Length: 351
Image (cartoon, rainbow, N blue to C red; front, side, top):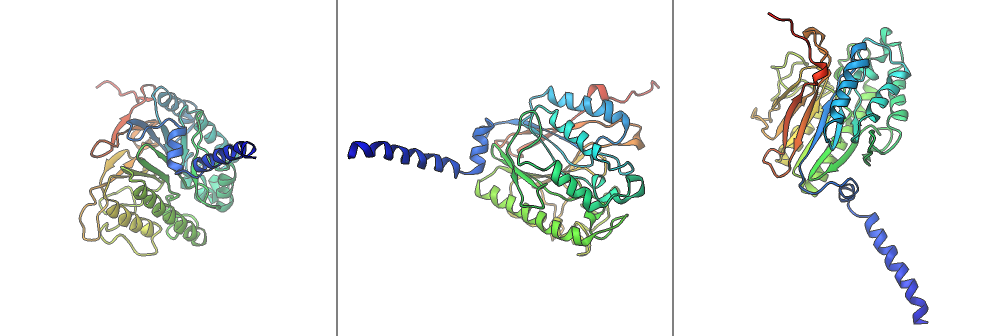
């Protein structure tokens, strides 16, 4: 009898071991699956607000993608606006964007911008329903729990309908996308047709996702957190390219970014380790520390990174990207290097 039970015990032990692996920490599983070593140094790519015109569509973005593919990146993120705010929101726009993302060799992530849904009700955008375009994005671009790219990464996904909010871990750093868009987050001050009934539930879900991200980072003793969103929320009153606000008191509760910034300020202050917020929206590449705490003191562990974007006022193609070197063993964890794609350089006339 005992001999007959041995195979059964062996099977039960194997099943228990398998169950243990299945219920192991998701982040540890992701590290093993993608070959990431705890504490290792790697690079990622950041871009957004592209393409905005035919030149960028046919030449600039393909050159940018080829440049990123030539470098060994752990992953890349497009922080929103896959089209201009004055062009049509037809289905082929989203198909084209997904094609770009999937042509990247490394895993690629994306968070929506206002140009591809909130502004689609404009006549020159095709007079679409903004909500219908958002649903289209969710049901086509965000229809799986994996990244884009030739090499895929499994992602944590927020519960429907907010499936565009994603989270992942590489090494000792926690990453997450947050669906926060320009035009006042579609809440109150939108220049076209604000929709608070859409905005406020999404805002609450996004803030919940952000807080859970910080909680996970603390639980896993992450060295840093990096968040990605499309909107420039107007971090302080010195920024002429965004809605003006007093960064000490933030803004009235009718502001579409007030609650998000307040939660971010609280979480960053409590986290104490480096936090980077990557955004697009105002098309001005910069790296700074614009957020103040409730006493008016600069929150020194938060860095804002704004990616390149279409900049016709400068006469530039601006299909460029930012390379981030991530080293959890370094004091600041993240170091940033703008990447000017050689094929996309703007010819400067001789003096």
